[in-house]
Image (cartoon, rainbow, N blue to C red; front, side, top):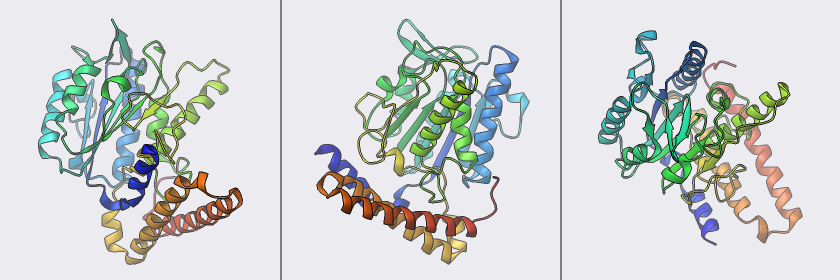
Length: 327
């Protein structure tokens, strides 16, 4: 009953209730040039998507990296423990009460003595220390995507109301190189992650896309899967491998988006109407899914087909009116 009420509460919230989006990207210690290059490339994929596709203003994007001299335009500072702490303290002081804070950690992780951490230049940052930094955000909704190896322990530590926590692995024991981060970044840079065809990629869709592509990577290399991503957004401290938009883990992530289309909508009244219709359809879909067990199967299937077809048609119309995007 509690889960159903939560889902209905989310349905009742308008899609544009989400405030400004702030993106913080951190790429940690590479150890070897090939890893440093890979971490940088993943970060740049996400940063380019933030500006080109998602429309996040540059003053709301921060990138901390191992080697700031590598890109003095996009890299804000060095990814040290103190640098991360300073950025999050400053952001907590200036972010609007309804802002969405998205933090993406890229690199190597470890679990030493039971303490999960991201490996950084200088002292590492543990999940416990990171949790203290997040406590400064008193009202904002937070997404933390820790795409490092051995990141699974971060869910138990960081899980709380208003927080969506994603990890590339299910435990600190999965310590081999993770592929989740590059695919998570790609989810916002390409169109393939938008499974409901509404013209936007939710945090849940990005997670599912990355998880699927990771599996394909291992299958293509004929290797055993050694990383199992998890998502927790219901605050119970337990991540789900198979989160769902209907209820439980995934219900909140399905309603979170990194793009802020307000400026485009303001300049195109027809697109604004399409967006309003799409938002209404999404609420109708969530309400239908919440009532699935109370409806006859044939009635549910007919209603689901009608809504999904209309979502696809509206999404196609929106994509045709939006500014040209990179395929």
